[in-house]
Length: 123
Length: 307
Image 1 (cartoon, one colour):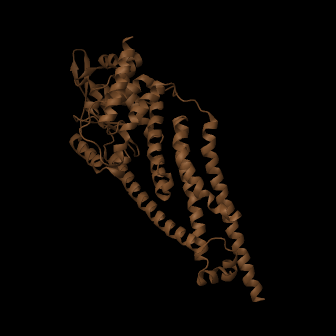
Image 2: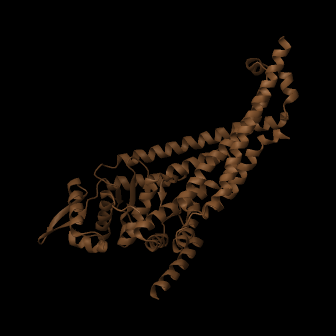
Image 3: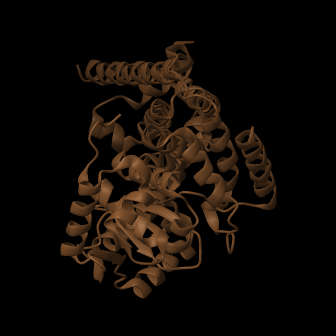
């Protein structure tokens, strides 16, 4: 749909990759993580921008830099988030969650769908 | 017989409320969401106008109101097709429903303001994505200026690159298309007209489907479906209270929709609900005109008596 994605979108993707890795990554490793999607230079530019904003820290790893995400005000944020969700009702309703609460029946249906998917994948 | 037109919007609002959710499932989610939110507002307005007109016929009989308006009470009573008990019920109903809608609207606006404050309170250097280090699996869009995508570290760790991209694109779609406003509007409309009670849940599903389809455009249909399954089966620590509890069932529906190709727009599928709403509005306009004519007759009667 969108030919050129906004720079902010790519920043989020790179940041998410760093969080998912759980250890410092070099620009090359981030590239590998994201697949063939982004050019090495693009990733490097994004990492530099994240670094200048203070969203990631970096350390020397051989000849390259390895980047890891910075967590700031994290405890407070997590606490606030839970407080909002725990209120339920309207407070939670304004947050559009990816997956809502599931009961046992929902989980069963999903497990079935997942089973079908992996069987298809094997074929 | 023609005075029955004032009741028509009430019936048609109920009809819209019952057939719009089904029609929405067979339309592209973007169109479906607009149909639901736009239709809910217009149907609630048309039905509310009818109640107001019925209630007005009662108020117009009041001697002081009649004097202010300069119409003859006697002439009005003679020509007025609305029975007093019906008008009384309409007046009571309208009062209760408007009070309900105001209460719901105030609560929702407060919640949205709180979300906006929360989003603004996150430091500027936190970009669009805010990661919360937590063992829970949670991901949501936080509306604000700018809106934020809040995801826990555990969620990110349990997804691969394609699924993370799908999740980010999904939450971004909620923010870009302002789905929280669609949902707020429908919630208030349903409070104003209980016949629309099925529309909030239908709108919620439709917004999720819209965000899924948006995400599928960039990340692929299977990546979105896999992310949903992965997070859906991750095990939630506790069931969410309130309105969210109903949402779980939607996940299976969404996965199944993603397994099929995107729904193509077939205009005739929207024709019936749109036709119902348009007819309700037209009936409303006719009813307003009829009451107006009635008042003019009653005013003419006063002037005749003065002469």
